[in-house]
Image 1 (tube, rainbow, N blue to C red):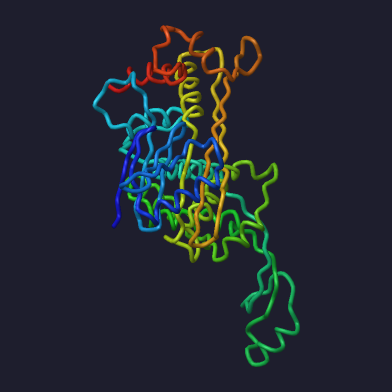
Image 2 (tube, one colour):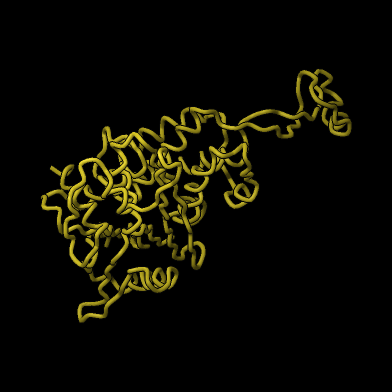
Length: 354
Protein backbone atom coordinates (compact mmCIF):
# COMPACT_ATOMS: atom_id res chain seq x y z
CA UNK A 1 0.00 0.00 0.00
CA UNK A 2 1.41 3.38 -1.03
CA UNK A 3 2.09 5.86 1.73
CA UNK A 4 3.31 9.44 1.66
CA UNK A 5 5.06 10.28 4.92
CA UNK A 6 6.61 13.51 6.13
CA UNK A 7 8.82 13.68 9.17
CA UNK A 8 11.21 16.18 10.67
CA UNK A 9 14.77 15.43 11.67
CA UNK A 10 14.96 13.14 14.71
CA UNK A 11 11.34 12.01 14.23
CA UNK A 12 10.86 8.35 13.36
CA UNK A 13 8.44 6.24 11.33
CA UNK A 14 7.93 2.47 11.27
CA UNK A 15 8.66 0.94 7.86
CA UNK A 16 7.33 -2.22 6.27
CA UNK A 17 9.82 -5.14 6.26
CA UNK A 18 10.61 -4.72 2.55
CA UNK A 19 11.06 -0.93 2.82
CA UNK A 20 13.20 -1.47 5.91
CA UNK A 21 15.56 -3.66 3.86
CA UNK A 22 15.80 -0.96 1.21
CA UNK A 23 16.51 1.69 3.85
CA UNK A 24 19.20 -0.54 5.34
CA UNK A 25 20.84 -0.84 1.91
CA UNK A 26 20.76 2.96 1.56
CA UNK A 27 22.49 3.27 4.92
CA UNK A 28 25.17 0.85 3.75
CA UNK A 29 25.77 2.90 0.60
CA UNK A 30 26.31 6.20 2.43
CA UNK A 31 28.21 4.66 5.36
CA UNK A 32 28.41 5.70 8.98
CA UNK A 33 27.84 9.31 9.97
CA UNK A 34 25.09 9.89 7.40
CA UNK A 35 22.44 10.48 10.07
CA UNK A 36 20.19 7.69 8.76
CA UNK A 37 19.17 5.23 11.46
CA UNK A 38 17.03 2.11 11.87
CA UNK A 39 15.87 1.13 15.37
CA UNK A 40 14.29 -2.22 16.17
CA UNK A 41 10.92 -1.83 17.93
CA UNK A 42 8.06 -4.23 18.72
CA UNK A 43 6.04 -2.58 15.93
CA UNK A 44 8.84 -2.98 13.38
CA UNK A 45 11.94 -1.11 12.24
CA UNK A 46 11.69 2.62 13.00
CA UNK A 47 13.51 4.88 10.54
CA UNK A 48 14.88 8.30 11.49
CA UNK A 49 17.28 10.85 10.01
CA UNK A 50 19.38 13.52 11.65
CA UNK A 51 21.71 16.01 10.04
CA UNK A 52 20.20 15.61 6.58
CA UNK A 53 17.07 16.37 4.63
CA UNK A 54 15.82 13.94 2.04
CA UNK A 55 13.25 12.49 -0.32
CA UNK A 56 12.87 8.70 -0.28
CA UNK A 57 11.04 6.55 -2.82
CA UNK A 58 10.51 2.82 -2.19
CA UNK A 59 9.66 0.09 -4.66
CA UNK A 60 6.07 -0.22 -3.44
CA UNK A 61 5.48 3.43 -4.44
CA UNK A 62 5.67 4.81 -0.89
CA UNK A 63 7.50 8.11 -0.43
CA UNK A 64 8.99 9.80 2.59
CA UNK A 65 10.21 13.39 3.02
CA UNK A 66 12.59 14.43 5.79
CA UNK A 67 12.53 18.15 6.54
CA UNK A 68 14.76 20.27 8.83
CA UNK A 69 13.97 21.01 12.46
CA UNK A 70 14.29 24.61 13.68
CA UNK A 71 12.75 25.00 17.15
CA UNK A 72 13.06 28.80 17.08
CA UNK A 73 10.54 29.10 14.20
CA UNK A 74 7.18 29.49 15.92
CA UNK A 75 4.71 29.31 13.03
CA UNK A 76 1.97 26.99 11.83
CA UNK A 77 3.57 26.68 8.40
CA UNK A 78 4.45 23.21 7.18
CA UNK A 79 8.10 22.26 7.47
CA UNK A 80 8.15 21.61 3.70
CA UNK A 81 7.43 25.29 3.12
CA UNK A 82 10.21 26.19 5.54
CA UNK A 83 12.61 24.04 3.52
CA UNK A 84 11.54 25.70 0.26
CA UNK A 85 11.96 29.14 1.86
CA UNK A 86 15.63 28.23 2.26
CA UNK A 87 16.27 26.42 -1.02
CA UNK A 88 14.78 29.01 -3.39
CA UNK A 89 17.06 31.87 -2.22
CA UNK A 90 20.07 29.55 -2.08
CA UNK A 91 19.71 28.75 -5.78
CA UNK A 92 18.64 32.30 -6.69
CA UNK A 93 15.37 31.08 -8.13
CA UNK A 94 12.19 33.04 -8.82
CA UNK A 95 9.49 32.26 -6.26
CA UNK A 96 6.62 33.44 -8.49
CA UNK A 97 3.92 30.81 -8.74
CA UNK A 98 5.69 28.55 -6.27
CA UNK A 99 3.70 25.82 -4.57
CA UNK A 100 4.46 23.31 -1.84
CA UNK A 101 7.12 20.94 -3.14
CA UNK A 102 9.35 18.10 -2.07
CA UNK A 103 13.04 17.80 -2.92
CA UNK A 104 12.33 15.87 -6.11
CA UNK A 105 9.98 18.54 -7.49
CA UNK A 106 12.35 21.30 -6.41
CA UNK A 107 15.31 19.80 -8.24
CA UNK A 108 13.14 19.19 -11.31
CA UNK A 109 12.61 22.95 -11.22
CA UNK A 110 16.36 23.53 -10.87
CA UNK A 111 16.96 21.30 -13.91
CA UNK A 112 14.35 23.02 -16.09
CA UNK A 113 15.80 26.40 -15.13
CA UNK A 114 19.30 25.32 -16.21
CA UNK A 115 17.93 23.96 -19.50
CA UNK A 116 15.96 27.19 -20.09
CA UNK A 117 19.17 29.22 -19.70
CA UNK A 118 20.96 26.81 -22.04
CA UNK A 119 18.24 27.16 -24.69
CA UNK A 120 18.30 30.97 -24.35
CA UNK A 121 22.06 31.00 -24.98
CA UNK A 122 21.82 28.45 -27.78
CA UNK A 123 22.12 24.68 -27.70
CA UNK A 124 25.30 23.38 -29.28
CA UNK A 125 25.31 21.76 -32.70
CA UNK A 126 27.82 19.44 -34.35
CA UNK A 127 28.55 17.81 -37.67
CA UNK A 128 27.47 14.20 -38.05
CA UNK A 129 27.68 11.89 -41.02
CA UNK A 130 24.47 11.32 -43.00
CA UNK A 131 23.99 8.97 -45.94
CA UNK A 132 20.96 8.36 -48.11
CA UNK A 133 19.31 8.39 -51.49
CA UNK A 134 18.85 12.05 -52.36
CA UNK A 135 17.30 13.93 -55.28
CA UNK A 136 20.20 16.39 -55.41
CA UNK A 137 23.94 15.92 -55.13
CA UNK A 138 25.68 16.88 -51.90
CA UNK A 139 28.85 15.69 -50.23
CA UNK A 140 30.28 12.66 -52.07
CA UNK A 141 28.80 9.79 -54.03
CA UNK A 142 28.83 6.33 -52.45
CA UNK A 143 29.28 4.45 -55.73
CA UNK A 144 28.61 0.91 -54.52
CA UNK A 145 25.30 1.87 -52.88
CA UNK A 146 24.40 4.20 -55.76
CA UNK A 147 24.79 1.44 -58.33
CA UNK A 148 22.93 -1.09 -56.16
CA UNK A 149 19.94 1.12 -55.31
CA UNK A 150 19.63 3.35 -58.35
CA UNK A 151 20.02 0.96 -61.28
CA UNK A 152 16.47 1.84 -62.27
CA UNK A 153 15.90 5.14 -60.39
CA UNK A 154 18.18 7.39 -62.42
CA UNK A 155 16.65 10.50 -60.82
CA UNK A 156 18.28 9.74 -57.46
CA UNK A 157 21.83 9.66 -56.21
CA UNK A 158 23.18 7.90 -53.14
CA UNK A 159 25.44 10.32 -51.26
CA UNK A 160 27.20 10.73 -47.95
CA UNK A 161 27.59 14.17 -46.37
CA UNK A 162 28.05 15.96 -43.05
CA UNK A 163 25.02 17.66 -41.54
CA UNK A 164 25.33 20.42 -38.94
CA UNK A 165 22.51 19.98 -36.40
CA UNK A 166 21.65 19.83 -32.71
CA UNK A 167 21.42 16.04 -32.87
CA UNK A 168 24.24 15.33 -30.42
CA UNK A 169 24.35 13.04 -27.33
CA UNK A 170 24.11 15.84 -24.77
CA UNK A 171 20.95 17.25 -26.37
CA UNK A 172 19.43 13.79 -26.79
CA UNK A 173 19.95 13.08 -23.09
CA UNK A 174 18.40 16.39 -22.08
CA UNK A 175 15.32 15.66 -24.17
CA UNK A 176 15.06 12.11 -22.78
CA UNK A 177 15.27 13.49 -19.25
CA UNK A 178 12.54 16.05 -19.92
CA UNK A 179 10.30 13.33 -21.35
CA UNK A 180 10.63 11.00 -18.35
CA UNK A 181 10.22 13.90 -15.91
CA UNK A 182 7.00 14.88 -17.66
CA UNK A 183 5.66 11.42 -16.81
CA UNK A 184 6.86 11.54 -13.20
CA UNK A 185 6.31 15.10 -11.97
CA UNK A 186 3.05 16.06 -10.30
CA UNK A 187 3.79 19.79 -10.04
CA UNK A 188 1.75 21.94 -12.43
CA UNK A 189 4.50 24.53 -12.87
CA UNK A 190 7.09 21.87 -13.66
CA UNK A 191 4.74 20.26 -16.19
CA UNK A 192 4.21 23.62 -17.90
CA UNK A 193 7.95 24.36 -18.04
CA UNK A 194 8.82 20.89 -19.37
CA UNK A 195 6.19 21.05 -22.13
CA UNK A 196 7.48 24.47 -23.22
CA UNK A 197 11.05 23.17 -23.43
CA UNK A 198 10.05 20.03 -25.33
CA UNK A 199 8.16 22.16 -27.82
CA UNK A 200 11.39 23.96 -28.67
CA UNK A 201 13.31 20.67 -29.04
CA UNK A 202 11.07 18.96 -31.62
CA UNK A 203 13.94 18.56 -34.11
CA UNK A 204 16.17 16.79 -31.58
CA UNK A 205 15.63 13.03 -31.24
CA UNK A 206 15.41 11.54 -27.77
CA UNK A 207 18.15 9.25 -26.52
CA UNK A 208 17.45 5.57 -27.23
CA UNK A 209 20.62 4.33 -25.51
CA UNK A 210 21.28 6.34 -22.36
CA UNK A 211 24.52 4.61 -21.37
CA UNK A 212 26.04 4.97 -24.83
CA UNK A 213 25.10 8.65 -25.09
CA UNK A 214 26.62 9.38 -21.67
CA UNK A 215 29.86 7.77 -22.86
CA UNK A 216 29.80 9.94 -25.99
CA UNK A 217 29.33 13.22 -24.09
CA UNK A 218 32.14 15.75 -24.41
CA UNK A 219 32.56 18.27 -21.59
CA UNK A 220 35.22 20.76 -22.75
CA UNK A 221 35.50 24.54 -22.35
CA UNK A 222 32.97 25.06 -25.14
CA UNK A 223 30.38 23.04 -23.22
CA UNK A 224 30.43 24.90 -19.89
CA UNK A 225 26.69 25.64 -20.13
CA UNK A 226 26.01 21.88 -20.25
CA UNK A 227 27.71 20.98 -16.95
CA UNK A 228 24.65 21.53 -14.72
CA UNK A 229 22.05 20.07 -17.14
CA UNK A 230 24.15 16.93 -17.63
CA UNK A 231 24.58 16.54 -13.86
CA UNK A 232 20.80 16.41 -13.46
CA UNK A 233 20.41 14.10 -16.47
CA UNK A 234 22.68 11.64 -14.67
CA UNK A 235 20.71 12.04 -11.42
CA UNK A 236 17.27 11.56 -12.95
CA UNK A 237 18.03 8.95 -15.61
CA UNK A 238 20.53 6.78 -13.75
CA UNK A 239 20.43 7.74 -10.06
CA UNK A 240 16.64 7.59 -9.83
CA UNK A 241 16.20 4.92 -12.47
CA UNK A 242 13.71 7.02 -14.43
CA UNK A 243 15.28 6.19 -17.78
CA UNK A 244 15.28 2.91 -19.69
CA UNK A 245 13.83 -0.40 -18.62
CA UNK A 246 14.24 0.31 -14.91
CA UNK A 247 11.47 2.89 -14.74
CA UNK A 248 9.65 2.59 -11.44
CA UNK A 249 11.85 -0.31 -10.32
CA UNK A 250 14.57 1.59 -8.47
CA UNK A 251 14.33 2.53 -4.81
CA UNK A 252 16.24 5.75 -4.14
CA UNK A 253 17.07 8.42 -1.60
CA UNK A 254 17.83 12.04 -2.45
CA UNK A 255 19.86 13.57 0.39
CA UNK A 256 21.29 17.00 1.29
CA UNK A 257 23.25 17.85 4.43
CA UNK A 258 21.31 20.22 6.72
CA UNK A 259 24.56 21.97 7.69
CA UNK A 260 25.22 22.73 4.03
CA UNK A 261 21.65 23.99 3.57
CA UNK A 262 21.75 26.17 6.68
CA UNK A 263 25.20 27.52 5.82
CA UNK A 264 24.26 28.38 2.24
CA UNK A 265 20.95 29.96 3.34
CA UNK A 266 22.54 32.09 6.08
CA UNK A 267 25.25 33.23 3.65
CA UNK A 268 22.68 34.07 0.96
CA UNK A 269 20.45 36.06 3.30
CA UNK A 270 23.40 37.78 5.00
CA UNK A 271 24.81 38.90 1.64
CA UNK A 272 21.52 39.89 -0.04
CA UNK A 273 21.69 43.49 1.24
CA UNK A 274 25.42 43.94 0.70
CA UNK A 275 26.65 45.78 -2.38
CA UNK A 276 30.32 45.11 -1.62
CA UNK A 277 30.36 41.58 -2.97
CA UNK A 278 28.62 38.73 -4.77
CA UNK A 279 27.20 35.45 -3.50
CA UNK A 280 27.72 32.32 -5.64
CA UNK A 281 26.38 28.81 -5.22
CA UNK A 282 27.93 25.69 -6.73
CA UNK A 283 26.59 22.19 -6.41
CA UNK A 284 27.49 18.66 -7.33
CA UNK A 285 25.82 15.26 -7.08
CA UNK A 286 27.25 11.89 -6.11
CA UNK A 287 25.26 8.86 -7.25
CA UNK A 288 25.73 5.60 -5.33
CA UNK A 289 24.10 2.50 -6.84
CA UNK A 290 23.59 -1.06 -5.68
CA UNK A 291 22.08 -3.80 -7.76
CA UNK A 292 21.41 -1.91 -11.02
CA UNK A 293 17.82 -2.06 -12.34
CA UNK A 294 15.50 -2.95 -9.51
CA UNK A 295 18.19 -2.08 -6.97
CA UNK A 296 18.77 0.76 -4.56
CA UNK A 297 20.35 4.13 -5.20
CA UNK A 298 21.40 7.14 -3.11
CA UNK A 299 21.95 10.60 -4.59
CA UNK A 300 23.89 13.01 -2.38
CA UNK A 301 23.61 16.67 -3.39
CA UNK A 302 26.60 18.69 -2.21
CA UNK A 303 26.30 22.46 -1.84
CA UNK A 304 29.27 24.82 -1.89
CA UNK A 305 28.93 28.58 -1.69
CA UNK A 306 31.23 31.58 -1.57
CA UNK A 307 30.91 35.33 -1.15
CA UNK A 308 33.39 37.43 -3.09
CA UNK A 309 34.28 40.51 -1.02
CA UNK A 310 35.24 43.26 -3.49
CA UNK A 311 36.73 45.51 -0.81
CA UNK A 312 39.19 42.91 0.39
CA UNK A 313 39.48 41.11 -2.99
CA UNK A 314 38.95 37.74 -1.35
CA UNK A 315 36.35 35.00 -1.02
CA UNK A 316 34.50 34.47 2.26
CA UNK A 317 33.31 30.95 3.08
CA UNK A 318 32.34 31.46 6.74
CA UNK A 319 28.55 31.82 7.06
CA UNK A 320 28.74 32.91 10.72
CA UNK A 321 31.15 35.72 9.81
CA UNK A 322 28.81 36.96 7.08
CA UNK A 323 25.87 36.85 9.51
CA UNK A 324 27.69 38.86 12.18
CA UNK A 325 28.96 41.48 9.70
CA UNK A 326 25.68 41.84 7.79
CA UNK A 327 23.71 45.13 7.97
CA UNK A 328 21.19 45.01 10.82
CA UNK A 329 23.09 42.30 12.69
CA UNK A 330 21.08 40.70 15.47
CA UNK A 331 22.13 38.51 18.36
CA UNK A 332 22.34 34.88 17.36
CA UNK A 333 19.23 33.13 18.73
CA UNK A 334 19.50 29.88 20.63
CA UNK A 335 18.57 26.90 18.46
CA UNK A 336 19.28 24.29 21.10
CA UNK A 337 22.35 22.09 21.33
CA UNK A 338 24.66 24.96 20.50
CA UNK A 339 23.80 24.75 16.78
CA UNK A 340 24.60 28.33 15.79
CA UNK A 341 23.91 27.93 12.06
CA UNK A 342 20.47 26.48 12.80
CA UNK A 343 19.78 29.47 15.05
CA UNK A 344 20.89 31.94 12.36
CA UNK A 345 18.71 30.24 9.76
CA UNK A 346 15.79 30.34 12.19
CA UNK A 347 16.36 34.07 12.69
CA UNK A 348 15.92 34.76 8.97
CA UNK A 349 13.05 32.29 8.59
CA UNK A 350 11.15 34.00 11.42
CA UNK A 351 11.04 37.11 9.20
CA UNK A 352 9.68 35.38 6.08
CA UNK A 353 7.30 32.83 7.64
CA UNK A 354 4.64 35.30 8.70
